Image 1 (tube, rainbow, N blue to C red):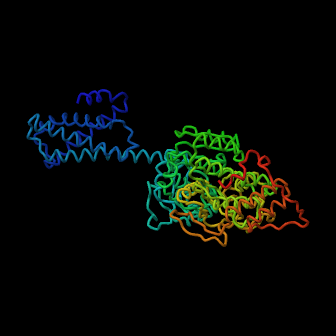
Image 2 (tube, one colour):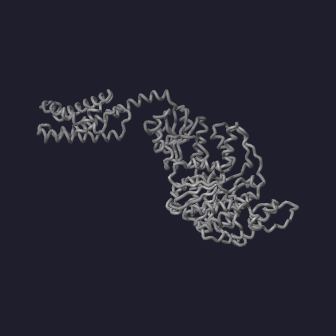
Image 3 (cartoon, rainbow, N blue to C red):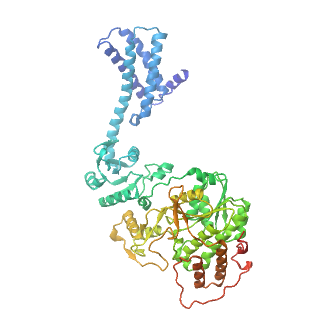
Length: 639
């Protein structure tokens, strides 16, 4: 009680609080007077009893309201929490008043019914006056805001729209209408904003309300739904933006009011990945994990997501100094032990030192050359890194006691027309046939959005400069997936895969590159006729469409969503090892057709025809000293 009294003494440091307290005193006095009049049919018997009790009641009410800090005076922000605090304060004051009157002062003439009537009236008055003040102030503010702020029409009238409408009063935007396809919401008001029609009615709504901007508040919309909404928005010629994706909102990475421009990922429309987090955690938590190619698009995302599973130590291994430095900066603040190694997977000695020094248990290999046209001109380097570097990495990891090994593969490994695709297929065969104490598996998937060298950033740059966009063929298609989704599924596949498995991710429907280009132009805000599209024809090693499975592979489901297992015939490890030795010898000679011919022996599905007049030169037998750099000798390959 003494502490509450001190709080009352110090609760009026300014005039606003004092005036607020005076208003509450008047309301309490008015409510008890009305309660008395209602009890006695608007007569005033025993006025001395009423006037003697009134100061006690007022004091107790003030103490109760001070206890719950209700004298702040900011009625325009009144909400449910204020109403609950008023209920608590009134109940506390009424109990104190009853005890003081009936048992301490012994006043029995104060009617019991007045206690109840006064409590109800006081509660209604204190809450009502605040709600009324909020409505009046907000209405006055809205009239001013309509002139000073940009008007918007919100697309969607669900939970995300309700959250957005609560945030917009604090911004430079004023909502004037909503549209939603749910017929039950037609004509209703959400936070005072009317639902003016369906999404299809948006052009009419725009003409009626003339908004400065459209805001899409449907974070759970599928790609097809988002495409339809964007098409309608585009016809209105009004700028449109969207709330963040459902995944970002659920992860707490952003809030609903952080609007952004619509991007191609929104139109891709892939359902959120439902991971078996426990199975991934069992494979990662408390173990030493090494990611090779850690600074690349997939490798860096792997590192970011692995930290969520709390490995004992994370080894980030990459030959690119600057990208690795950028990764280090991005992971500043992590509580996990992280080691950054600038090294090349073709350096067998360095590999062995790193793996043994840190007692690595898990290796996730994302280190590979991937640019198709470039690798057509650098055959030996493609093999050195993607094939022989992988072989050395597997050998060192196995001999050093590693327990799990994962290879990141590509859909270009299926029926390859490119040399890079062949190197990825050889990698799959090595993982699937090599005897090992480790659990070795590979994961195959298609293109990821936003990766280094991806076609989308190239198109966006061409659109920005209003240059001609070059597309190889009007019917060319590719599979696309976002990097975070791809890596999440890779980790899921890693957690459930068995020895020598080749797992394939569900890439959804292929996307026509021409449609992708037109969508990017539309999202840029430029008229279609300002950016020309030119068709250059398919490149020699380019396919019109990519495959995810060979015709001879049997596809089966796994226990994980969007992850499939393939089974097909492969050569024995001894046969593959002999072919790899011959391939290494051909690389030493350096005749491109000889190298491609030997690769075709390993990958018969390789779409390549030798040129006429091929020179046949015997391949030399290489000694260990003639191998690439510090690579592990193939003589040790049998383990």
